[in-house]
Image (cartoon, rainbow, N blue to C red; front, side, top):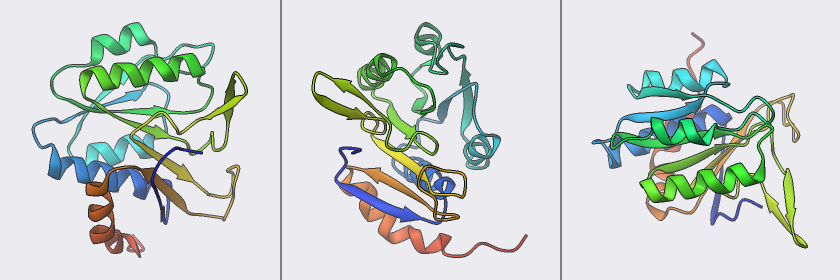
Length: 179
């Protein structure tokens, strides 16, 4: 449903984000800003902080929880590396516009589909799924999610370069220290 060539499992959704941002640190070191919506899970923000990215918050539209596009355009600059779109109550129209903004500005779009897994809208007779707009989509399969495996996650993507990075680095996250 994500229209991606690859879907790789991770121990948590957060591990998918760590891998993506670590990949960007190595492949795009001249950019260091990540745009998040102002409504987000602190643990996700802390991942970007721990990796020394500058966090830029963009206000949301109260009615649907999606980015305020007018404000988003003002937040983007030459240091902006990626935008993390938390799919929760988004309007499809907004997602389409966000994709256009990212493409125009050469910014990676990471869709956080932890809560919104398998949601779609209809465009004519065709279903357009959440998670199909971004360059990367991350998923969570924790206990309270649409698909629950008690814990777990996945990342879907098209980049062959990221696939090589993932294969080389995923074993670093097989176990976490108790602390």
